[in-house]
Amino acid sequence: MISADSPLPPLPRVVIHYCTGCRWLLRAGWLAQELLTTFEKELSEVALRPGSGGVFRVEVDGELLWDRKAEDGFPELKILKQRLRDRIAPDKPLGHSDRP
Image (tube, rainbow, N blue to C red; front, side, top):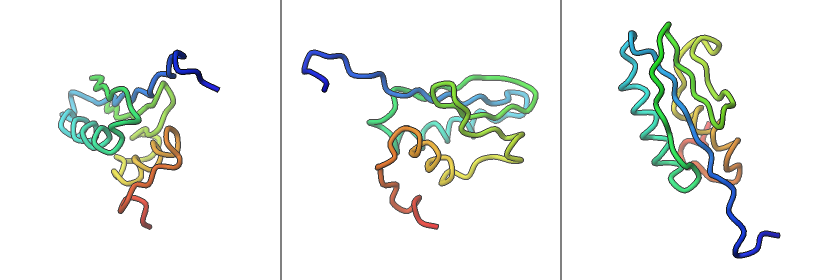
């Protein structure tokens, strides 16, 4: 049981690693905006981390959610939201993003 003076556990942090040479900043920024809008009370922040070599990865608290190279493409927003929700807020409804 958590008492009133106990500190709350820190909220999760998402990091989007994107390739600057590929010009994927806008894509990373759009994903960050969408995740912050959907999970405004469940996330502490979404950070953008520039990289190179075609990188496009999404991590939550250091755990991989999506890797463009491993998944053979960019994430659909619906799939990314579902994966993030399953990790940080399993009971959160996602509205139309929950539909098949």
